[in-house]
Length: 559
Image 1: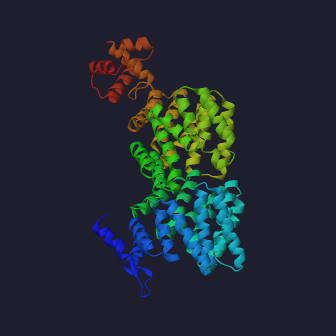
Image 2: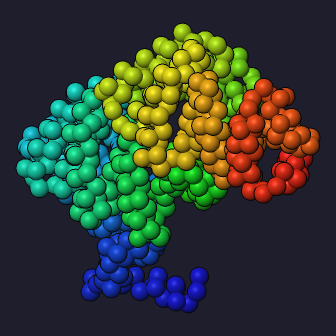
Image 3: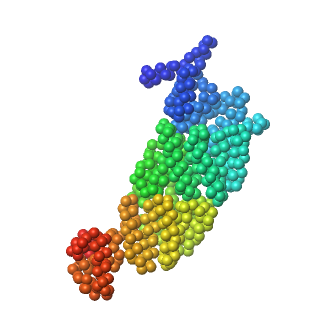
């Protein structure tokens, strides 16, 4: 400890005229000011020093507790809240004691301490019953109830409970509870198929969170909760905007720890979607390595590892992907559908099919199923189980009728196109795939765009349109090369540099030294057609002579 730090510590110690230890007012005000400025480390250290010298009053203990929470120090957070709770009970401020009992139970619930959480929620309810008077804390005690209802999928009950909580909050002017309730109303409405209505509420919540109307802990909860359920509903535009706002909020508090892990995971998801895979990997690694303190950061560990596994898989680093998925599973998170798609990429079709069938059978809620159904279609088409693939496409169509987001519509159209190709209907496939491509372009998702183009190329080729097929494949190849998507590149085979199959035939014969007349005779086509193919070859390969074309063919293994 430095002299300055020692001095700061001892300034927190003073005595009154009765020789009783009292807190140093200047240090206490400094701690309060640091809390107000979101300077969490100084708030924690200063208030802790003051508390060691002379126990803090309950309101200041709450400030210390929240500073501990923002630093990911859950044990210290709960200890400070318990002390403040007991002090409120002793002083007769039962309503405030109930509020803190709720937050202690809430923390225990997120840490998996079910019995402890239930005990604190039970104590809060008993104290409320003993009070016998109306107070805003009755609204807070609806939160454990609606969380349990949400886990059961009883979204109508959640909506009713949140409306009741909102009414109580408005009656008592509690801004935090108002927005917590409205945020969960949006969640319930999205799950009830009323996404437009739910997202209007969500948009209001974003404004309140970003403007600082809500206190720190509820603000963090609102950000994490909303991004999670918008992501689960594939409302990607909302995920992008909320993640941007969440990042700004985190950046304003450089000392904060507790929400940063989840924030980085969400950023990695959106960064990957935009095609910046290296940056997404860095964000996922940072989330997993740097932010480990606190229940929320620990929950983010599995998600960070899964995101790393996904990027490794797409890059063709299969051993690293498998290790990341195994670590994901070790932290209690199911590494699907990534693991099943990894097995497919490794050529282990039976293992892929078994895994994805198990996952789809286990997930019964629509928005849980939709996350794995595209992979199910891809795998069952690859294994020739077209009836299963068709059933999955039907499921996707039914879900998109209720949740018609751009991403879900793109996924459904993409997989319907894949199935139509496998069923031998390239014309119908092209209709679906063009629709998917437009939606992926709207979402600015380069990898998904490239994969759709590959399927479109197959459909064009089936329809005899080799030129269009070559153009689509060339564009897909360029995208895969930029992304470093090695398995997808391997699936395309050697580059044809945009040349159609017929142009490749002509190029090989040019390289062999044949004249246009000889080529025409060999391929049973007119000299005029050969001349047109030769001009196309010159344009696509950037050469200006037959000799240069032959050299190009040999150099690129096309001869």
